[in-house]
Length: 277
Ligand SMILES: Nc1ncnc2c1ncn2[C@@H]1O[C@H](COP(=O)(O)OP(=O)(O)OP(=O)(O)O)[C@@H](O)[C@H]1O
Ligand SMILES: [Mg+2]
Image (tube, rainbow, N blue to C red; front, side, top):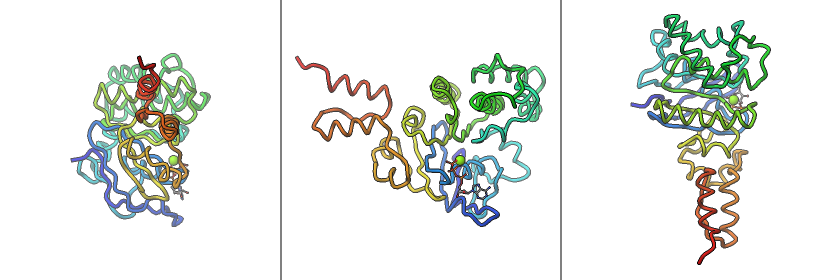
């Protein structure tokens, strides 16, 4: 049984715009999944089905094998935490601390547990020193961190992040990558995220879905997807810089192995350019 599965999921907005068109998506346990696609491809529309914000026009969404119903929606929202693309949609309490406490309080945790989770979540996103601040007056990247903390404090099994790196500074992006990877490694959390920043994806994901015009047009491992320049350009995306550079060197006859992450690329370059005895 998959943690999340959609079967021929179709969603038509009230104004008759098709947001999703027969989407089949699977999130297995302990996976790190990227959903990529140009503006308007359907990523946010898909994510809003994972915790029952949207209901399918046709097809189905299964959470641990079960459709989302009125009866189980609270359980589903404990299990699947979704951080929206726009943090303003998620933040509303008078202080950062109260905002992060909202979810855990709402699921009936006692005061002490809530306080502990809030502190821990704020620490994880690097906002512990801004607990008393008014969320409304934070910068865009700070708001994003608070929104993430609010979801993390619920300790979901599946964390869904819509464009998590948008608006973060370089250190913030690098912290977020470490953070996502540690959630997956330490807690076995399943992470699903969307991004246009293709070069970051190999650092965070094992599996990639490519969306275009409401449909999933390709799915596969990092190598399977980012090896396909034609596919990516056809959906207005690009190949990440490292594999692009390595391919260009290979085309010029340099013997270097393909790599997608920084670490693998560094090792490939060292092997390729080491002076031979
Ligand atoms: N509230 C809405 N009402 C009508 N149509 C909408 C609404 N929200 C999105 N759409 C349409 O649904 C389609 C999918 O939009 P969606 O927001 O899911 O794309 P996305 O992949 O998340 O894009 P982005 O990269 O810009 O965040 C687009 O054609 C969009 O115009
Ligand atoms: Mg979106």
